[in-house]
Image (cartoon, rainbow, N blue to C red):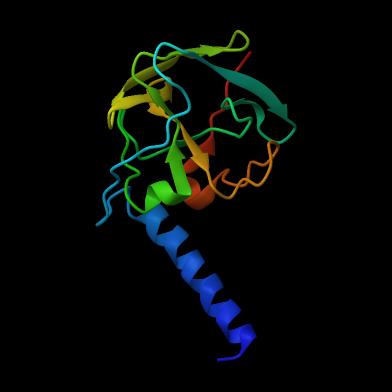
Length: 155
């Protein structure tokens, strides 16, 4: 198989993975046994508010990367699991870590117990990072399949 065909096949497989994950409603044949945590217990994790001319004010995690919500998630629940989490990783902290927002916002940032740690939420919706964001200013996950949205806030 020539190089161009290999690249096309790889691109189609990657696209299929994103579409299958986005259309699955978070259901997956795979299971996730570990979630990368952003903190150690009893530590304070700061969520920042940044501005973009397209979406307005939105939240970014300690790494500076945009945070997203998944429309099908019910309150205080993570339904993006398994393979979905390889693309959309939950913003989790160790149990006992405190989460604060760098500036006053309209909305509530809190946590709920999830997978041995605490999942960070905005107004009870779980927050995720998107693997397709390549820099701190990227919001490439905005609007994907009409179900993934940057975690926007009002100041």
